[in-house]
Length: 344
Image 1 (cartoon, rainbow, N blue to C red):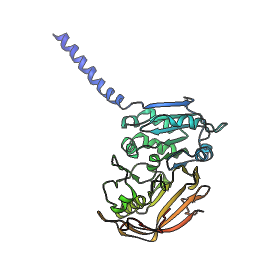
Image 2 (spheres, one colour):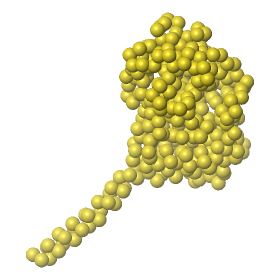
Image 3 (cartoon, rainbow, N blue to C red):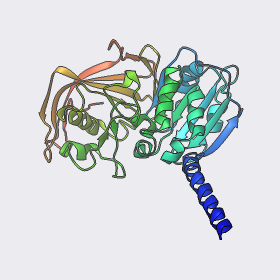
Image 4 (tube, helix red, strand yellow):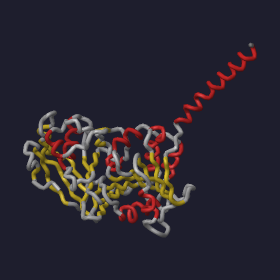
């Protein structure tokens, strides 16, 4: 009887020791990965970074990668982050250039849970990469799976060591200080946002990624093609009216268009289709005439700057060679809410 009791006690003790180990192991869930190129960490280091590569969705812009991001990545490792999809970027980015700037590897990681986002594998891959790019998809899944995890910390670390951080569509949506985060609700249209800037689809998050040049910025993508000016202005008005943002700038990008922001804060535009980047900011005479629940938005005297391919915008000094207009919106006129009538 005594031997049985001792054996039982020993088994209990072993089980107790195993519980913390099992709990710890549960957090080390390696994501599904697709690797093209060299599995070992590259010895290359970023040159002239950090930098940001922001794309507006649709087909990727070769020049944004090959001519802007790759010289900073310096032939190192590329990591693609996503919560859905597969390895569509691997061959494209690995074979985009030849010579010394050809990536050492391209690795896509499907990081679709907080356990995976907190794993050693993901943390190590991001921290050591020279270019990290967030794919399109649903930005709410990025916030839900990555906010407050090691992915967030690793992205900040990689940027601080000089890497290029970028994203397209939903990947662009999470790059600003403020994030349009519908969290399962269908994406709001401009007509809906202008009719009621406090409608159920108007959900905005903060406290996620913080890259200094993107402070005070909310982003939007697929811009002119999906007529998103109205909802972007509604995002701005809400952030200011609710006291969330002491100042606000919108950075909106057309499809098949990229903005590369270098270490000095100078952004250069490239585009496949003649698209543009739009920088929208409040002025000294901006008036938030009506920003209330259940009522149309009235928001007057904003500065809209359109920056076409080959042109630049300096996010530090405000200098640019784009085209500016003073823009107002009155949501009471559903058929023609903007002044001037074409806000793009």
